[in-house]
Length: 315
Image (cartoon, rainbow, N blue to C red; front, side, top):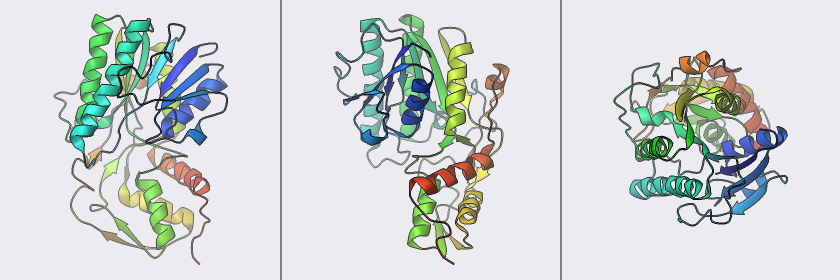
């Protein structure tokens, strides 16, 4: 990425700021575009150029994305899997992606890295390979990301863009918000004796550390071929919600009782069990450094520092 000029949409968010840090460290010039609905301007490194824009507006990138950019990383999205306004979420995500694709075509920037999600698969057999079909998402979020993948495919095959699509497992690390690990930490701050767990605790998914996630993305960008390439990013192992509770409890020095809301999933649209195949990524010469449990523990320690939580919470 040295000497390349890069635009990162959603670059004030959890993954976006880690990506921006990494790109800058490799010598890239980075412009971040974000409306800060999910992100935080103060997380954006000073070395990056920050532009606050709403990508649902068709002209949001006018004067921002120009023909001297080399690559766009499109991370901006409404990410809640259990959104209370699913239609608005679907429309917002597809509008943002259309804005990026149309502007890239207009100004002549031809390289796109698009971040998708494991939720496009729905409740699929595990491990799930990239060529699994039919794709049947069970949330509006997953449906919107699958629709966006279709838009990206169209521009790759019909408008001369080179697109790399990344289907993420559960990515964890510092600055993560609104997910199971920080949720448990906040619950323990309020009550270190009892933890309420959504569902039955047996939900089991693959957790990938954000450092590995970014390593994998950059490896794919360097080594993949063709106008369109889609890769799962995850780990070979999984971690249950109960196991996450155990890890967070252990890091805080607690021995709480667990209570459950019941059912096999935490909310409508939640896929209770997920593990992506990463054989295609392995064939390209990349393996994660941290397996799922290790990623959860590493992220827990980082988030305790992030959130300024002392361990143990209670004696």
